[in-house]
Length: 201
Image (cartoon, rainbow, N blue to C red; front, side, top):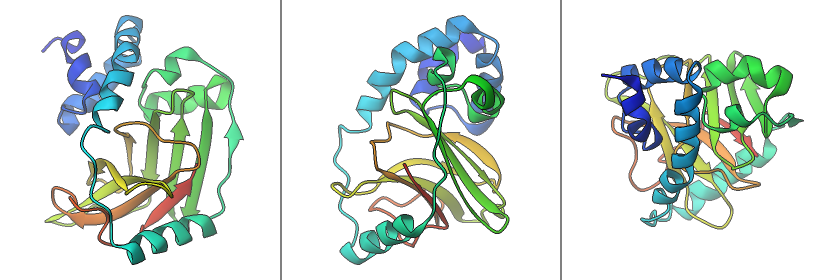
């Protein structure tokens, strides 16, 4: 399929892992698709907020927020570069962000495990995870966006222990991005365990 026809599906996170990876390689080289993706990003992000998420158990939510608050985050301001803000995968954007990226970059690591987040001025974000074992059969890793005023919101699933993932929706200021291990298909009622990794934005 022509990669130019996949922009809308990518914005809605509707591609499978292989298609998304192939499209991200194309996106790094195609200004037209980057501009089209930027136009679709805000409407696609708005869809994530249409259905209210159920509240997690109060004790679990408190444990997640407490652990996230205890983590030390490195916040590095980056210069503006429009095409990075428009949804490039972190794999393509990481090198650019070192020199001229946008938004803020945050990271948290525990021994060999690491989680970093790149947040654009429009509050879209991409995470890079490394050092985790591959999710076992019947399990998946799930990324969450957690705030003090609303229920945790699922932002994407992945199985590889070292991967790059563009989060669904936007990341509000002062939110926590966390990763938990859940059953295959992800949790529907909020995280079922304390996060493996988390970063406060």
